[in-house]
Image 1 (tube, helix red, strand yellow):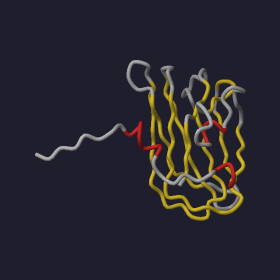
Image 2 (image 1 turned 60 degrees about the vertical axis):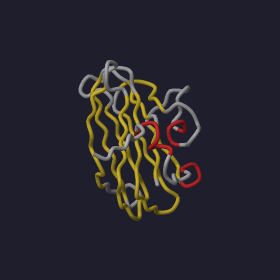
Image 3 (image 1 turned 180 degrees about the vertical axis):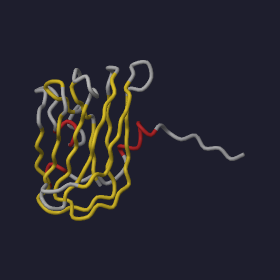
Length: 155
């Protein structure tokens, strides 16, 4: 039998890829942010320890691109130590946000005794993207936890 031992995806996958420099091609809008965890910490490589909302409840992060973009890969990583069920919805627009098409809607159960990291790597072919919207419901139905996002990368 042939065997290969693979490195952990959460350790290696995010570092790979030709990620776009979001600072130079987009503006970001966010419904809330904790002063110690600004949105740039999740969007710019090497900028910190991720974004955190300033309070509980559903949060939205919107990227508005200066020029229409083509995306082949979307990488999302959430890190959480609090037990909760999160849902996020990622959608895109080709008309400056007047209408959106869903890329994915995903639920994840975080648990300190097991699952503390959610990494999602989507291979896509999105053309003419003017707006990308991420809506996070960090604590389905209970509204007690603050939304977090450790990384969002686009290629």
